[in-house]
Length: 229
Image (cartoon, rainbow, N blue to C red; front, side, top):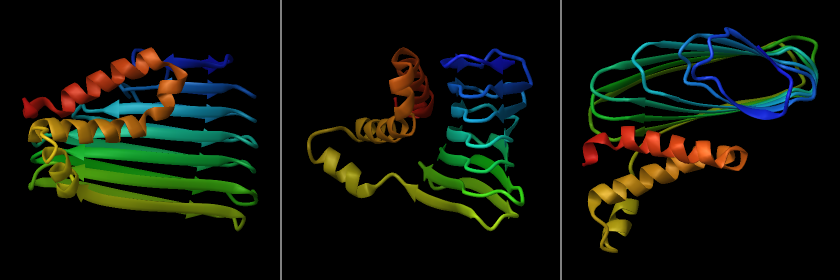
């Protein structure tokens, strides 16, 4: 599939393995990763990629920035509960100068959930002015959980700005207390705090396709707060 128009694309039911973002195209994609994907960004293209993963199976996606001045933004929400393992592998290769990649992954893990995230970034030699950043945030909603995160940076160029960061936390007791002190029930307070995190992650999507954003927000909140009822 070659994307040749500036638009928002829902690829949840699309079975094409290779997706190409054509030159000078500004595109947004939502993908539930029902199949493995390879996504190629051409010269001066800009891709905003969103996903929400909950299924117990191996998920794999590869991004290739092969031509100059491409820009990639990735926002992924991962959710695991009840001893099922969500295994995700993301590979990103930058082979072009003046290219940027900004990735944020937010994981929510209920009791006995397990998320296995393997991210590999490879930056080719002899390219310049490359920027790559990864932020991984993990929110645990119980005392028993597992998380495996393996970030790998293969940087073969000197003119690179690259970083990765990881944060692990539970729902803030301070924030819960603040909401409950104003008459909000505990389960509703949990709901509001989770909703705020998810809204923050997908906020850019609301400006691209607000109706899809509202449906996605409703779906994610419904699944993640299933045992608050």
